[in-house]
Structure formats: structure tokens, C-alpha cells
Image 1 (cartoon, one colour):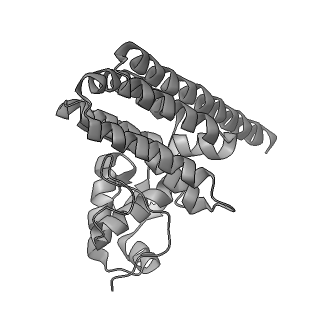
Image 2 (cartoon, helix red, strand yellow):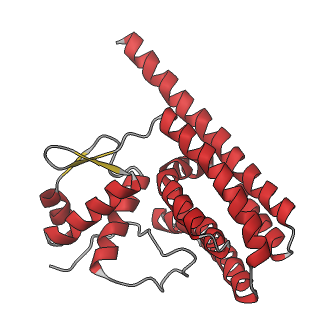
Length: 248
């Protein structure tokens, strides 16, 4: 068995242009499962078993087991006595993730401004252009949207890599994995795609211009704006659930 079902694919290496990712079965299974969690196809709290996922993706259990181990390290699934479950995304986890992300993203952006090379500038600008291309596709699909989300996250990963601080890069990558579900909610439910593209472009241009204070502040504003939007969604969801519980 060596198939993978047609799910949105995620998990590119930081800053790697789409299509140049190592096309391995292991990465495909990991990317498919991660995308299914981020986009809500595997809902929070859902029980996951190797057999069911292997059948769904039409692969053997080995790459599924490896993917679940990675997703547990990413903080997206939790091990259970029998199998795994998708982690619940609550307001407490959200607040913690975005507080740390604002600090790390802002600092990484400032460091990257001093370290960036001409090829790095080209790479970041190509990623911004690819987001624009995906946005302008006629009748764009959910998969196109997920690709834009992934590239937007990869812009932040690439900036962290350019910063030259490996510990900062690794910490930020882990936080970004935990934030993707929330960012998908914001983009899909609030239709914030245009704002996200414009803010990414502004951050990239400030970095390329060598303006560290502006680049860092734009990055922090970007995270704060996203945090405010998602918090509004989570609180509305919590209030609705409380209303339903009282009414039942």
C-alpha cells in the first residue's frame, strides 16, 4: 500500500517552496493527518486509531504510527491507553500559545533583518507572491486555501530560520504547529485572507529594507490582531455552548 487520500497537504520544510518538499510517504501521511486536524476534519477530542487512519489514507500502519508520534510531539494529538485523540483547543491553550508567539515572532523578525541575504529576500518575496497567486485562482478550493495558510505560516518559519538562532527557530516552529488550527479558524470564519496577505507583505518588505524596529513591531501587531480575532471566536463559541447547556 502506498496511497494517500486527497487531503490538503501541510508540513513543508521552513521556507521551502511548495512542490519541492521531499515527496515521501512518511511526509505525505504526516502532512495529511496534520491538515485534517488543523482544518477540523478530525475534530478536537476525536479518537484516532492506526487501523482506521491507515484504511482512510490507504497506507500501512507504520507511516501512520510514525505520523501520530510526530503529531504528539507537535502537541496536536494526545496519547491514550488505546490509541490517540485529537487535542482539545481551548482558550487557555490559545492564550499561552499566542503570548509566546508574539515574543518569539517579533524577536526573530528583528534578528532576521540584520542577517538577511539577497537569496533570502528573493525567497520571502516569492512566498508572498505565491499567496497572491493562490488568492486569485478562479473557484479556488479548500485545498488552495489550506496551501495559502501553510505558506503564510511558512513565511514566519523562514524568518525564524533566517534569524540564525537555532533555538529560537525550533521554539517558534513548535508554537506555530499549535497555532495553525486557530489561524485556520480566523481565516475561514472571519475571511481575514486579504489582511493576512497585506500584513505578511509589509513584514517582508520591512525586513528587506533593513528596518528592524518597524519589522519587529509589524510582526507583533500581526500576531496581536490575529489573537484578538480568534479570542472573539473562541469566546463566542464558549458562550453559545453555555447557552445550549442552559437551554437543554
